[in-house]
Image (tube, rainbow, N blue to C red; front, side):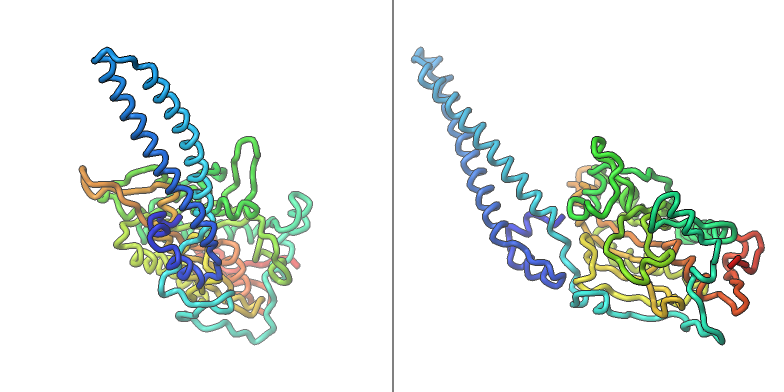
Length: 425
């Protein structure tokens, strides 16, 4: 959530900054709510002051032996009026809070203008696009019966997957490789977290209230949800907490399934593993001092890149344009891996700096000294990486004309020495 003080100081400037997202800030509604809040607060303070004055007069009247009944009646009337105004004030304050919760983060000045992913700015590429002396197939055709969608439809419905035999082992090996690299080489603390979170956790990271239709609710009477990403439980590790400055930055890595409705996709996005209701990710989260969050974003991008380079998969980095930027993000760098079956780059990691946007919602703070006033931390996250899409990339980039798939050298130790995968048609 944006700082309410910024709104009060210059709402027009915020509206202008948000326009790069294509977000139309309702300034009239904001001004009406803010005006009502100020007027009610002034009235409330005036009534409180008047009641205090009359209460003191009652004390003087008692001392002087004067009849206090009229003063007692006046205090009672002021108290009743104060209760009514206070309820109106709290109602307007809640409406103002709801309004602010629907406003996205302000994009950083370096975020390019644009409306869709077609307007994202390419920053650089690594590796050469894979070339074949035969017509490459997509991952669904290569994997054959090891990718069992008939079973997944029978078990759960569309947009789920069952991985069998060699494919399941490859999936597991990728998870272990990523966790080992991020913990042993990059210094992240590994976490195991709940896959079900409460409403407050999703509010803190910005998925609610705006994107409630995109997440799976477990039970309405418990207000519990399946996590759309490990970002939610991991970032909430510091919700309502004050972190010692000596402990910053906090670096967490976590592997979880992710659950998303993923509605509205068409065409090739509905084929295979590219976009599912349930998928796996290894997530990187950093909680930093405000002075160091931009350095941390570069670090997270680098850490995610290490995995792609270790697997020798060609990729590119892009800076998301304003229209493609996530709700809570001030800036996002996507890493996109080359998928021959799609003949294009596809996102495999999204690395974002949220500045204090999530921290203000979560009241995640740090204290620079024993007597210092608590300040908001900055939060960041990035996929390190999305398992299913890396799986696709390996199958499609390492396929051979015979149908077998070569295992990248970095993965062989995690595959019990197996160097090739063979799939049944």
